[in-house]
Image (cartoon, rainbow, N blue to C red):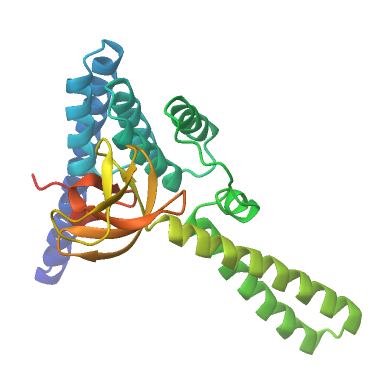
Length: 261
């Protein structure tokens, strides 16, 4: 065996060892996360809500969030009387799994039991929540590609102008619906939930500012802008004002929002 052949064999073996080790670490990490998830579920079933919440939160911080994790954590919050955090978690789960009826029904019941139901939800909002932001975006991209291919095919395979215009008009209509869905879901990603009991809505972003209203825990708000430790918000009843940064939790959690280990 030549030196070149031995070197090639050594590099090949090294490659497979590295890949195998990496896969082993990934599987070990996944196995550990699954064990923790099951332990949290058992604690929840046993009524040990503090332990269940602690494990779920640790998993979210270190392994990332999933629809099932957000849902189970929110169930724990709800049973523990933390209505705001429960609503935020259910909303977060719906962003990850917009078609899950169990999550949507549980959130609806929680809002109903705590007087948080929105009086009117527009048809556009209802339709937009059928799919997630990524799904609407992917569908819009697919329609754009389909329209481009349709126009390209018309050059090589002439068809009746009426048929071509009808198909193009249909694609444009569906594209407009998709773009509306993208816009609504993007706005939903900018929302937050009040997690403090009876948060005061202030006229300015300063301590001691006059309060105009009290916003209930669990109420959905939209963050308009942030100034120091205060945020200017609109709530789902049309009220507008400033609230402390500690009184709300954003629904769309980024890595920067995750607690540090």
